[in-house]
View: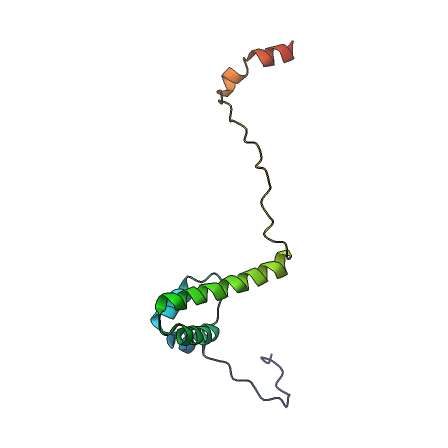
Length: 121
């Protein structure tokens, strides 16, 4: 069985070497990418990193902040697409009352409580 449609007049688009693109990233960009919350491509990280580096004048903290801000924007847009534009919902105005946990008795003692004795009678 063939690996695809070989009878086309379209030129094959070259597939980028993703490992080579990752290896070409600066070490700090690779560290940021390792902790990223989204599956960024090395190519998009390289473009964003270069733009942030230029705009920040080489300030590494400012570059990281711009990368984090870009990721936050993408996450917010994705959340709206996936869960709706009102996600995450506003927290309730009043917190729910917290029930105090009652002391748990071993089951053999719980069977002999006065409340159960009245139910059985």
